[in-house]
Length: 612
View 1 (cartoon, one colour):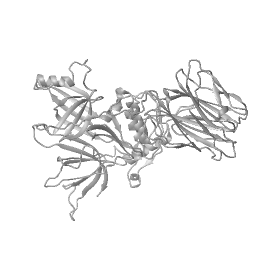
View 2: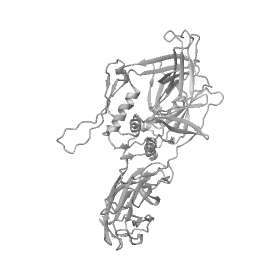
View 3: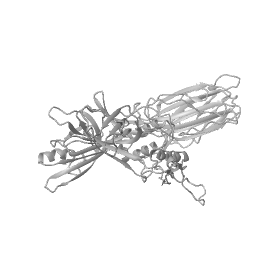
View 4: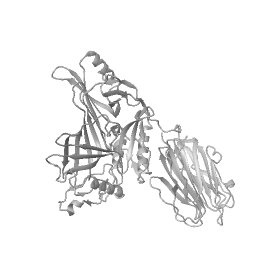
């Protein structure tokens, strides 16, 4: 479990040598932290007592020196006992001039694993987590000698408190799910002319172990001498345990940008020995849970290159007209798996959008039974966007990731299996706002042949629109008698209307039913940029040799297609009328069946780019 805050309570005290500190909701065994900040006075006189004993301070900072006195801040900790009082006794000393005591009750927090860094000023320092999950706390304190307010930090819970215009504090908390470095955060007070200091505190989750989940690696397996150039080996999804090789006919496999690709193949059970072998991977006894659909993945190699890892989730068995029993097996790329794991607790992530995406998948993989070993590509997009998730019907990790990515300044993703240091890493990789590779691959088609064997361009004004809008969720109304209406995104009219196109409207509903106007507006902009007018989808089949520059992890690369045919003839000056460079957004490989001869077919799906 990830450490999270159960309650936050802050109590102001002014001018007196004794006072109190209220606590919020607390359960026996909760980790409790007390932040004790005082204006004028001495840290030595600042104490708190009651309930289970408070230990010695785990951190203390004397206020900055200057013309205005500031005693400073001390932090204490303990585990809640069975009989904690509603309020704790506090002492300050006779020279107290405003103090605030803040009590945090933390679920699943480890009192022995707390990181604390501090600095003068309003900026809570940067820190690198020593564990993969925990609670992030940003705390600021000032001796203000006047009204002082602090900024609300997006994605954090917290509060501000001031003691009679003297001591002022701000606290903001949120769970974290990564060992990636955390940037400094400015608590942004309304004035920086007062003495102040700021803390970053990380409370590690109980049992977090200090390291993120390690994705499993699998031995590199390539075809041996005498084998065909296509090899398909079956493994356990969670452990990577090798089962056996299979030899499907009618095999096709694909990979797509930001959505699952597919795998399909037929296994003929022509003999009892073959049926027994297949039965060890796909048991005929439906109560046998040692293997079967949902538990397995298949690694597909072409000429020794790993072209895909697919989760095998569906089988269809029967007997054909010739009396031959068969088993058809279907699967999807690994980004399909999170679509079937529900989110069971509320999440609020407010970092760079790519870090939020990594934290979301890390949260899924924190449970061993849903840790499929996705390695998470590092990097940032420069876009800070809140990701809030509330458990409910059809709220899963996969569709949450897909929906969050669909913003005008969003991102794309793909799972690319990579061979690194003798093992296979299932790498979830990102691009913001798009996946962009460095490769350029050129294919030709003409009267005398070429590498392009067929092509297709589909355009439909019904697939796009010339005016885009969207609807979000319906905000809750305090007055039940008032009519509630859903959030409506700002309309975006594409340039097609000014060029003479009629209005063609699309009004999708935001997949997460967001009630945030900015989120819904970004969703509108996303579709207006992606599907304006009658957007073309270009796909073509090519032949590729074993030394082709285009490989399975080439999504995002540029593909240049040059056509020569009656529809797109060569111009009088000898140039091609169709010579386009476009971004690769998907591929589908259909290998030639074993012993049947012929060539492998590769269908490329591209996003329309610019004319060369």
